Image 1 (spheres, rainbow, N blue to C red):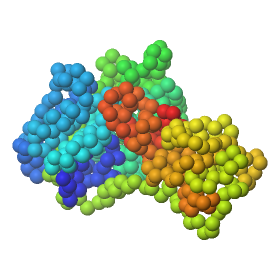
Image 2 (tube, rainbow, N blue to C red):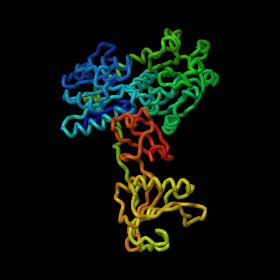
Image 3 (cartoon, rainbow, N blue to C red):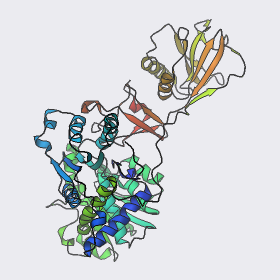
Image 4 (cartoon, rainbow, N blue to C red):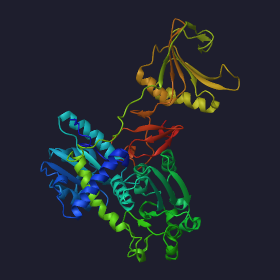
Length: 528
């Protein structure tokens, strides 16, 4: 089922699932709700009041603030609230998460599922699978909200953070200078800021972390692609020495449970590099606030307790804002709020197939001097030309072998590495298939993904009748020979969730997993 409401039925798997205008609408409604709540105003305009709506809290990892703020938000709305006991469910018997959700989905007319998982990309996968299932049975699709998935993202934390930053700045969204400090490698709240900070028109980010805990390159590149100014420092010592301090500091804890033994051996040095020292207090400019997604380590916090009663404490108010933002998130995803939204939403997702270019055959092209099987010309069949042109012969042979295996070209044929027509120093690969009369569109798509830049020639009676030039596809998906190499991803084969991999071309032969957000080099996505 579909709805013309701009928000009803929308899932939030990553922070970018709401456009910048939609995020600003969320913050405005949250501001109105918080003001009414604080001053004893009428809260009924914000309350859903729908007993047919079930909100399921499914936390497969421990949580206090996210879980309890969502539970209280759902109770405010007077909807059915269900706390899923993961530790005593059939999930522990290796039941698939899709089967579990399908079962729970059947118990209510409308459903919102809030999930926290170690597995990354689960909400996106469930959104797609349950969306198809709901359409098959004629039901309204369930909503999925990501309460934190592994090292990937935590979008609802990001929304409460941005709301808090705006509140600190008296709702001035013209600019922000933010310092991100701590474990930026594992910190999913930091990763969500790559898109969430676009709520501000100008953004400067200081990344403060030792190399072992640095922000992954692909997130840093996305920050710069979004127009953010980025500076990097390996410790708070070096950051303080720079003299270019932010008035908004965002600390994250060291996630020791996700670290390997070699990094754990350096725990003391790593923690010291990102822990605030009392000697720096006098160097902090007036109006500065420190934030933290919480919880802090009770013994070794990067924000020591001597700061709790100082004006630097912004984290307590930040934590409270989780209730207000999540109350409004439920209201807009349920379709109760949002009918007055007038900004720009997300662009429609399209599947671009312009990477297959059919070139006109303006004249009969004889093949005697071009495509050969040994010394015999191809009279009828298919010739794949310009394979990995310009690469080394070793790479061309590797690509030829990959093409033959992935396209299952087990037929009479010939292949080889030859000099290009333009230069004796440039090589290319050719595969001649005299027994293959044409290549179907699906195989053209697969061939474009395997070997972009090649050409496909359909030959009849010694003349080229059709010619296709293939470029790098914007997406690669639905191939058995590809997989995400992130072991925490929902599509990772060993996860046994049976979610087909899907990659976006992010430029420069980099492909990003649709589900976990991990970047892969082109060759990495292939299993062959």
